[in-house]
Length: 226
Image 1: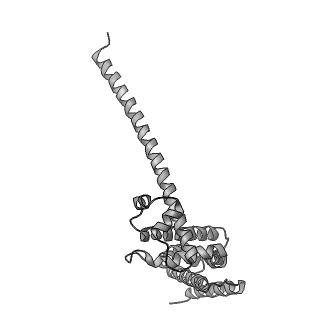
Image 2: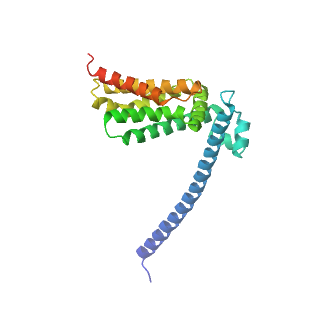
Image 3: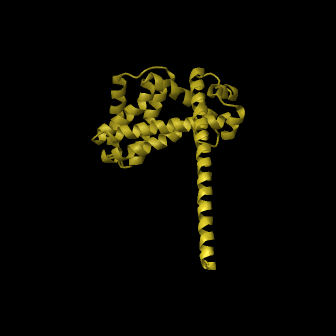
């Protein structure tokens, strides 16, 4: 006849097994729900961006247009976003992260500080020189004014993120205040990119060479400042 202690251990073992199976069931359900949510949000953001590009600077799309293009419902939209502005903010944020990631990759692929600075500036300017990227970037920047007034403008946040990438090459080039010099480089490159974007003009190789030469000279000159 089994002891009471053995019976207790058996019950504890069964309880643990049941709890583990229950947790697995919950995790499976959560995983399915999360996958659906990610798919829905991706569809809404892609539809929103496509319609913003199609609008080409005119009034942005309505929620009804976005959900129709995404193949979803209004209920689905408001399950994830409180308003169209919140969706736009998510699109702007994703666009900025994509640009920063690309610039980081290009800077990391260059060997010396001058080439790294040039590679970073070229990567930023590609948003204006590549036709497909230009249309998307123009749409994102045009709609970025719709985000919360308490949030920094997309360009400000983008410059701050890019400045961190230029700080190391700026330091290696002798800048006394590397982050300040890097912010100047990032700000000038983003401003130039926006100029060509909204002029709907593709910068030439000479335009790029002059910009890079000017920024390099400024960073090097800052080494002798003060």
